[in-house]
Image (cartoon, rainbow, N blue to C red; front, side, top):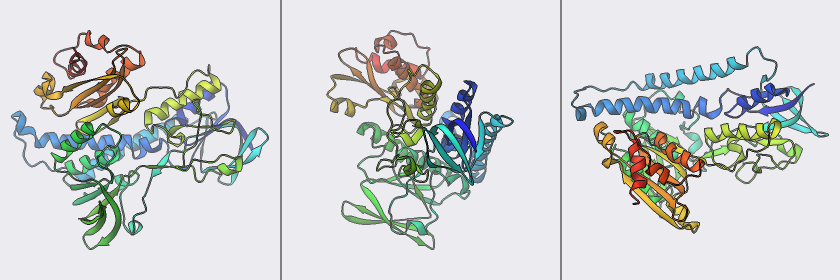
Length: 457
């Protein structure tokens, strides 16, 4: 029976890097992965979706070419080729990860499903397939899967999810997409730009529920301008297979509504992969949502067991999972200074993109903050006008007392990039006046980031 100082279960964003770092620090390490290296980001999330969205943008720009004085006719996306390109990028990324472990005994890469078997004093016994291994420390990095709601008849339908969309190589004629969150909005725009009719069904009063109402409304308006239809306050309750695809029954404020579509995509959040790890054998129990409670150092209630990535609750992003590796590394072989007390930005990769960091105006007011709000419409930016990318706006929430930025929403072309200017200021604990007094290159979209805070004068 092999014994390791640290066993990491799951090769998502935190696992591979952490395993190599700990091995370099002299620890004996095993990284166990039951499926494919790279986790959700590489295999079906960030990597292929952003590749597919890039292809969709090319098609969209080609259709708009006449706006720039260029005559392009007969724009016909090859849907299967678009997905094949995205899958090729996935395969190369996955292969690169696998190759980086080849020929190394430490960290050892073990393929198989790992489960806790029992405590062995202060150590842990784990089963990987038919073999058992011993670990002094265990890091759980098992990620999440698509949450499938209790919709009557849903399991009779060959529905699409974040995990399997890449394998469906036929373009839907009419896609019914259940869920108006971040994944749902990105995929809705992708399929629409590929040529599908798309209807988004959202049970809430707005899409992107965590955002300020005006930001969500503007994002919805952009997508409606491309022909995407929205059904808000509509809860999907039943679906049935038909000769032409699927009929979805929705409850809309007590009224029944039916939507006929050829295909169904379910994007209603993520479910933590904590239900088949044998956690009960060591006295570790997930929350009602399936996540594992951790402290600011990502330690669970069981000494020696750590949780990183989506299963530890809180922000579920690739970049937070990667930062989790740095937190655990700090605890095991570092100065123990890193924690989850951090500023976490994120983005919705629609076009225009929504870059976000910190508090929304709604959150700041609920928290009783004394704030001032800056806003700048992208139609006032020279670069946006020149490139025909005038959609969206920038909104910044500022503490009126100390002039620090509490949060920002950047709905704009390259919004996911532009928001980092605010992120850096927030990490530096610098007042917004630092940005206001800086010189920005002209003409750039970054000028709009400065113009937003300059509007407070």
